[in-house]
Image (tube, rainbow, N blue to C red; front, side, top):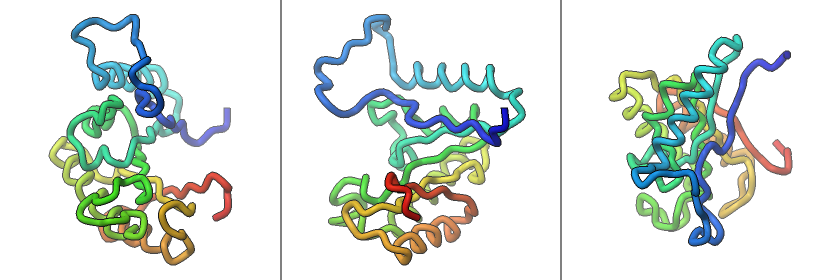
Amino acid sequence: VGFDELNFDYIRYPSDGLMQYIQYPITKPSFKKADAIEEFFQYLNANLKDAGVPLSADLFGLVTEHEDDLNIGQILERAEPYFDYLAPMVYPSHYPKGFSGYQNPASQPYEIILQAMQKGSERLLIASSSPSKLRPWIQDFDLGAVYDASMVRKEKQAIYDAGLDSWMAWDAANKY
């Protein structure tokens, strides 16, 4: 119908709000969020791979750093087989205070994104895949720091220095 890619955003379990009230009534005792998310990835791939366009999935930025599912069901290696591109949202503002020793990760865009892309690349190579599947979302909005053109250039440079050549930028206000 004219789309050049099918990108899936926020395929994950919730992590915010009153989590103690969430119920998953159709789950079994052996239920694991990562299994359910991977089953959905498999479903998307099986039903859309012949659409003639690349498939991509947005992932939480910390999936490049964590081998567990972050309690949202996302694991980098379990998404990789089903998509042409993986788009971790490596917004430095979304990394916790003290991450990798930085009091304010939002003020360290180069360092945060370089580390994320290097670790993500290493993990995909170990999984017998290609780091070129990584096409991160970068921050182009003020949160935790002012993100002017120089900050965005630092993010892009980190991606290039990690050996990658593709990225997407996001700003909810659409001011790029």
